[in-house]
Figure 1 (cartoon, helix red, strand yellow):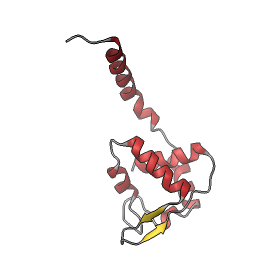
Figure 2: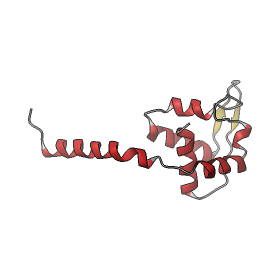
Figure 3: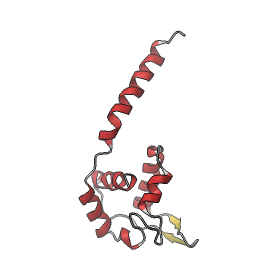
Figure 4: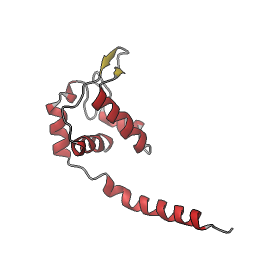
Length: 115
């Protein structure tokens, strides 16, 4: 089978992405937990048990292998405050995280997805 230059380049890029990916998920757990605590995230979420909202482990499992989708969905929830369906079937506006620092938001999302 002959490979064209674009296919070969794409395969090489994918290989590099796989090797680099783990470092892309380096995060500061203490900072993420502090931001979550300061914004009352633990009122509705816990790491490993369901409260009003899903556990962070459940969120991480739902999006395993779909990180781009996960980042988009979580970012929307924590920055725009849309209506979300709670575990009991009711709906409520999601709390907006009180920070404009994109690095803090990314760190929080990485921590959630690492659970």
